[in-house]
Image (spheres, rainbow, N blue to C red):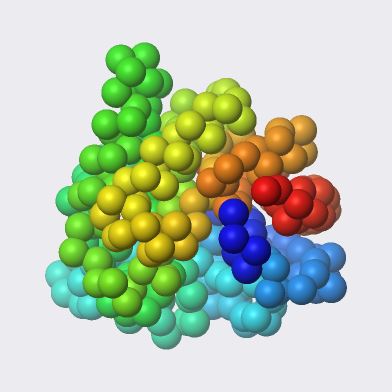
Length: 264
Ligand code: PGA
């Protein structure tokens, strides 16, 4: 691990928290974490679309980045129900989450569509958080590594070298996510992060590949966060349920930062 690397900690509130709940959560989180130097920490929250404008206005951008949970790749057009990059720019969104497992598996998004979204997000100078991960069936067939490589190779196809600084990856095994999820062991997570790191180096060269943050997500909680963050190639945590209470999230943040910075 290189010394100047930041730790990336964030949450996606999924289809929970309305506008006022999002504002309350963000104000509290900001108050609890404002003393933590941001040269060390990239903190981000990804609320629902209807809360985005208020979310962006209620906490400073240099403290908490605000992300959108999805985005269409076109600037405008006949796409009823979709949201364009220009619309997200207008409300001051910083980051676009792309290819979350619920979108891949419930809403049937393909790697090809995800690739168009990644390219569009980067072309509009957003940070792009590409989520990848294998299903339980793929894990049981021992095809996880191939699946992760395919998701990366298609999802990141055509990215320009200068856009890599805005690219983040989240490894979220589908079987580990949500109320019925079983968290990955730290060893399993580290093994997959290493496959992802190798693939990124293969795609973008060693230095660039090393610089891309890889976050782990899927049933991260107060108990397992400390172990996960100490593993090689885990640059951050992407947390659902355990981060939706600002106090809980703040505890995780404060626990993991020193551990991350003391890892060799
Ligand atoms: P979880 O969600 O932490 O509640 O499992 C993770 C995610 O969906 O990103």
